[in-house]
Structure formats: C-alpha cells, structure tokens
Amino acid sequence: MVSNIVSIISAIIAAISLAFTWLQWRKINRKIAMLDDAGAAIEILPAWYTGRMMMGQWWFGLRTTDGSLIAFSTIHAISDDGKWMDVELLTEDEVPDKSQLNIICAVADDRRRASVQIDKIVAAYDLVTS
Image (cartoon, rainbow, N blue to C red; front, side):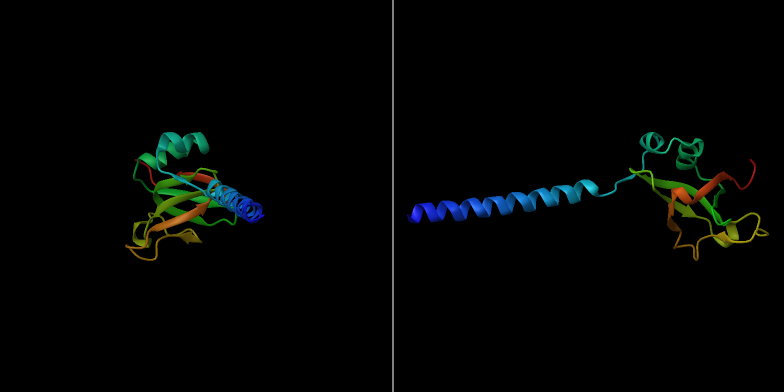
C-alpha cells in the first residue's frame, strides 16, 4: 500500500518535472541570437549591404520609414531571425552632411552602439564617396 502511494507521488513529480523541462526548452529555443559573422549574416539578411557594411568601417546611412537618417560606421551583428541589427553610430561631428533633418547619431563618443529594427529601413547607402 505504501509503495503504491510512493509510486503515484513519484509519477506526479516526474510529470511536473517533465512539463517544466519542456517549457524551459521552448523558452531557450525562442531566444534570439546575434550573428557577428558576415557570411552567416548574409544568409539571414541577403541584402547587398550586409556583408560590405559588416566587414568595413565607413560613413554609412540607413533611411527609415519616417524619413530619419541613421548615420553609422559598421554593422556589428544581425539577429538570427532577421529583425534586428546592431550598429556603431557616428557622432554628430563625424556626420559629413549635417544639412539633412532628423539625423540619428551617437550622443557621445563612448555611447555609439545601437540596435535597429530592420523592417523600418527603406534605404541603405554610403554617406561619402571614396
């Protein structure tokens, strides 16, 4: 009799443990990874600018859906779901043409990193010629 009760309690605890493990597994699989390898990022975001802007330092611009210009020097990483990119912003002093309105740049030299939602980008281009 006691062994049957212990068996039932053990089975209930095992079922709860299994359910908890499965929920944790689902949570881990939903996490977004940031890819910093240009080759892997090109597979996720096959835009012409991905590899070029990840492998070099330059004066680049991203035009957003609201008309703002994000001035940056390089792409550090792209999320594995293709929704986000981490960029290194230019400071206001580094932006070559300040006549444009709504320029988004770094607030300070030590605060350059930013994450950009990729679906808000309508154009990517060089801000200066070589």
